[in-house]
Amino acid sequence: MKILVATSNSDKLVEYKKALSIPEIELMLPEESIDVIEDCNTLMENSRLKGIAYFNRFKLPVLADDTGLFVHALNGAPGVHSARYSTKGTYDANVIKLLKELEGITERRAFFETVIFFKSDEKSEYFFSGKCHGTILSERTCSEGFGYDPVFLPDGYELSFSQITLEEKNRISHRGLAVAKFKKFISHHKDIIK
Image 1: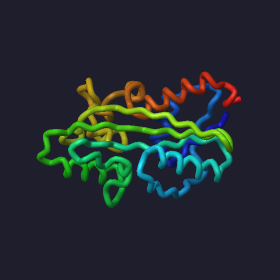
Image 2: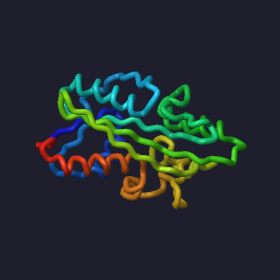
Image 3: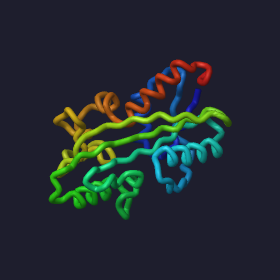
Image 4: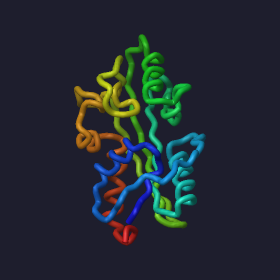
């Protein structure tokens, strides 16, 4: 079964493939990106909005997700606006803005949350979520990883998301946990992927 991952982000596709690894499922990027304005108030609403748009356009089963980084000291910001936190909206610019906002603040607790929306046909709609708690570091650990990975230290670790292996990240991360729930769901509903 071919499943479209509703993104143009190849980094995200790599994480999905590594975390899911079900022989019957071929994950793929769309032939073209759709400009979906994710202006909803929750990750669930945004993931559904994106998933419906991609399903309607390509007529293929779709996995769509929305992820947010929620920083307690910033009243939950950047939250649902994580990907577009800075004016430029690039990984680098978003991290720079986040670190600037947290200058002089010692309380740096935060969590990542991902909500995955899965649609296999006209009627079906399923949601899977995952959270990972941690701390925002005062500076980047390295240039590896994507998004806020270089400044996010997951609880119980001495290395940032950028510094641990992809296998380990998939085991503990917000997206990895959400994908694990999707994988468990699929394993109990084999009829969907026939």
